[in-house]
Image (cartoon, rainbow, N blue to C red; front, side, top):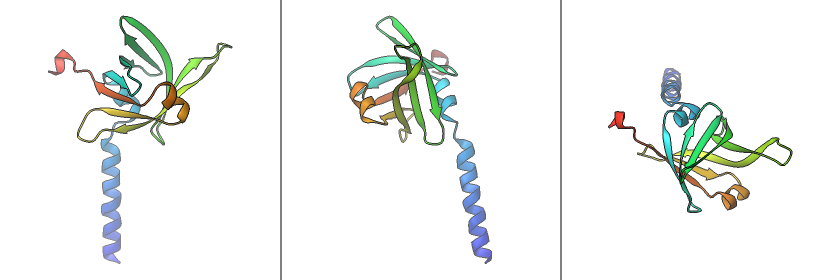
Length: 130
């Protein structure tokens, strides 16, 4: 019985420590500017605020709303529909790349994959961090 209780305490401690050491996805996205590369061949930069992502490509910038579902690491981007209301434009499952600061955004559905492809986000190094 003591071994079972000890094993439970160790297991719970490991889960607690690993859970506390991971920053949530919103913080992770907002702490960097990102180089983004799509499997569709697009490349651009992105910067995340609390609810908006700003993208820049060839001197043009655009912004759109995003929302994170932390329960399943799902990231959804929104666009205005013809009525001026927000609708989901694309949805991704966010995965960390092992031994890297990169994030992989895997399309959560066929529509997203076909329209935008999967994305790789690489943090842009700031001069102050070098």
